[in-house]
Image (cartoon, rainbow, N blue to C red; front, top):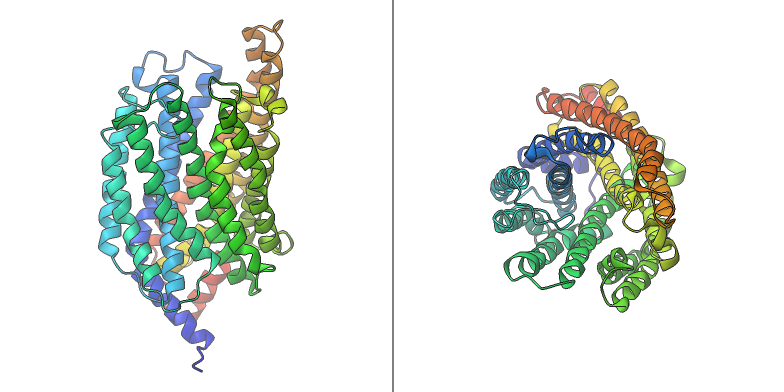
Length: 469
């Protein structure tokens, strides 16, 4: 049997990372740009909730359009760019071969982000589709679909060209995400835009799409990173790993049916909401397995990477429990159509972002071949996103509960509801501002990293290892 020494393995990994440096660095740079841009739009959006006169004379930045632009920049700018970069890197690393199809990745990335700029201009001009998390103007959607397919080619080549037949949970989740997004994205395009269904079926399809975006894209990408980085950083095997396959299939089987819980009390057949509630409970099986496999994070989170992964995993697990509990009709009548739903969304989006930040902390220095240029900026980002994330979710959840309880009381006026929720919305705006500052520092640090001369000696390598992990 041929054995590979740690030195040989490290050199092989360095060669793989070097082959992916430029295309993945481009993806991450675009992702961080949209993260900061989306943060600016999010702060403005929250300020408009408290001061409706803000930008009221500018039609391009009215409240509804600003909300759609913020959402689009975060999901299709930050999440897709960072997610494709992470999935591709993980698949290439586990394939044992250098990145193939780098030109596809670069071309797809350029077209994707150019189409995204056009989409944001279209939304500002009033061409949004009005479906949550799918507000892209119809004229850019085919371009985005083709661009994404091109971007996914290197990841698929890494999967099909892997050296070993044996596969890992990281590969299952990453490949599933790469394959499933074009499926539900194209279905939504047809059923909502090009051959639109009628009446309340539009709401059913729209919530189905939004749920798939969370369950079949964001969650698998984050889990792929967690299943790879935890044993990599700790040197320990994952407990109860044999159960991971059941967690994977239970997420794919039940996660896609949960969208109807957003329609409880709406003008749709009651069985749609009932199926969604049942699916939200059934998918808890997936969360239990994820906890059993990754629970060592809660005991070993000693570095910044591990701590971010731990908080991201905790947010993911809590989000799953919250979804199941508040999908019940008794609680949904209080939280439905309130800021509480935004808090739930931010919990899931924050979980994804925290895991991606941890992945970026580990991945970026290896791609660049150099240590992070400023540990101070890294620590400032670390503290800012943790504080901002916690404050944002807590403030929106509190505002939503107050709002929902007041809406169910006919004696309470809308003006009174606004007065009661305003302090919490102000706190949410502060939280978004703190997060924005942290993300801007990370983007600056990342740009400095890729313009830093690569470490060429063992001392430089040691610094990179210490600063990244």
